[in-house]
Length: 80
Image 1 (cartoon, rainbow, N blue to C red):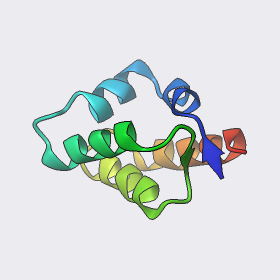
Image 2: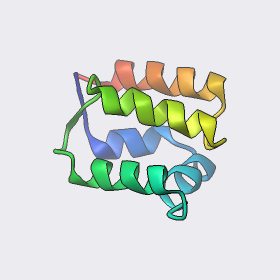
Image 3: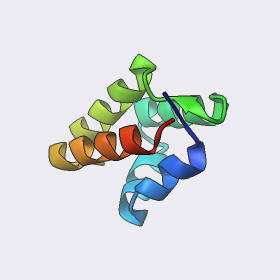
Image 4: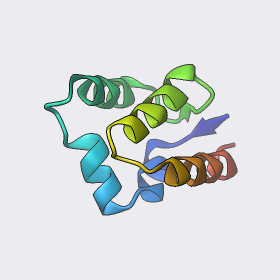
């Protein structure tokens, strides 16, 4: 299932975007941002790295567990 990068970014709140994409001091988040930027557009939401990075965002407090679940459902709905 494919999702455009813009469609993904539109699912995030400004606070979530800042927490996920601007915390470059966290090496794992920096890696995730680099992988997102390097990924083809649209990207495959079923790539295991996508769910792993969403889980990591919960670990570091960038997403709550409930918001992670809601975001994943929204991604599935928006993907083609």
